[in-house]
Image (cartoon, rainbow, N blue to C red; front, side):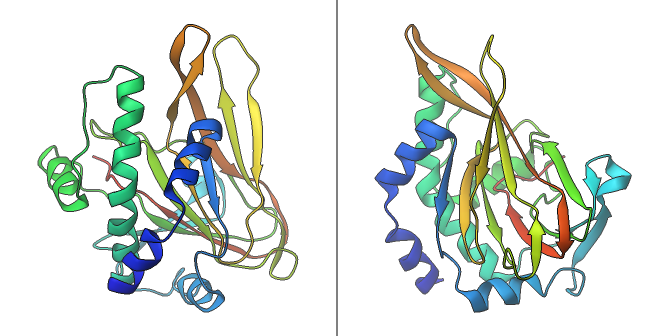
Length: 235
C-alpha cells in the first residue's frame, strides 16, 4: 500500500485535473509496469472470486468480462483507495460547478460504507478479455443512487503484438451538438482516468452537463486484456 500510495501521490494531479476538466479523461502513461500489467491480465478467467459475464448475454458486445465478485485483490484495492483520495476533491468540485449538493467523503472506506448502506453491493470492477471480432459497446456505469463520476481503466496487453484493433474509445455529447469521438492511445501498462457519465463544461452562460460514454472498438486479431476499476458498486 505504501508503495502504491507513493506512486499515486507523485502524479501531476493539477495537470490531471486540468485534462479531466478539458477532455473528460486523463491518460497516465506507464502507470503499471509491464510485469504488473501482465500479471493482472493473467487473472482473467483464472482467478478465484471472479464472476464471468458474456458481453453478448448483456447486449454490450462480444467477449467476456470477469467481475470481482467478492473483493478486489489487495494490489487493486490499494490502487483504488490511493486514487480515490485524489479524485474525490475533483468529483466534489464538479458537483459544485453543476450545482449538485451531493459531496463525496475524503476517504474510500467512508464512501463504500455509504453505498453499501444504500444496498449497492454488486461490484462493477472487472477484467475484460476480447478476442478476434470482439468489442465492448458504448456504455456507462451509472446504476444506483450513489455514482462516483470518475473511474480508472488500464490496458494489460500490448497493441500490435498481442492484438490489433481494440482501441479505447469515448464519445461526448453536448446539447444541440453532434457527438464528439475520442480515441485514447493506450499502450501496455498505460492507464487512464475517465468520466463515468457526465462532467461539467463551461460555456458562455456558465457550466452545463455533457454526457460521456466509453467503449472498446472491434479487435481485428489476437487477444486484448483490459481492466476497468470503478469506485462505486451497483445495486
